[in-house]
Image (spheres, rainbow, N blue to C red):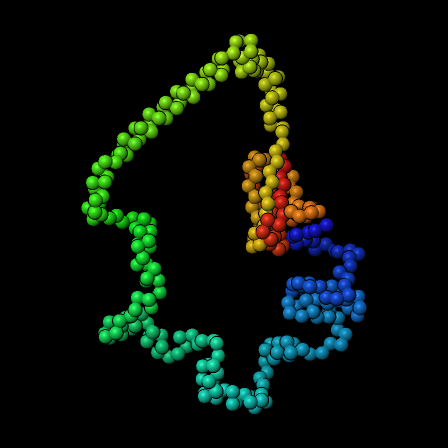
Length: 311
């Protein structure tokens, strides 16, 4: 059985449980995962970077534990007890390290640099100088000045260009159908379609003799028999429907499915997409009469599972 969600034990005991027993550590482990090593007879927990034995056998201080002890304590280490620290902290060494490194110093940490790099200061220097900036050096400017970009901006904007500014547009529009003329033609076509449909329906319903007019017979039965009417309504209400959908996008651990079955009395089955199509289990919430929410501990891969909803 595959569980795809976390188990909430509500502070109950796990009785007669056994850790996963393996001769070698699991692959693709996540932090907090535990297992029992059958070779050295010890239990291990994964820290996110290494497997650490859960018992105290052969225990010794680690670099991590030593650093944590120092950082969490109140005592300080004398600077002369740290090898070469004075040399490494010299001004020339620090500058050399910064220049050779891949990290940058935040501008606000350099006194006066933020003001020198301010927008007003930079603009003033550009305007007072004799040099010009190439348009290619202004990020996105060439793109914004393209004809296609300008047209898209005009389409998205609330501003309008007067038709007089577009050569030949007024003459071209003079011969076009106006909105009112187009609406009138559309109304005429709709009315003709309605009349045609009404005539065709009348042919179907009234085309047969009274003895073979099925629609008329059903109407008479329902009018005369209240029990038949109830029976049909109950049969329609009592029938079940099915909805299925592939789920998973590799990102979301909560997936909302809209089934539109109009009931909260639904059964939900979740199965794998590949043979042997095993049934798997996740948290299922009946969100409302038309939707459910599936919750996973780990986001399913793209279309990894299929949800089947019956109700």
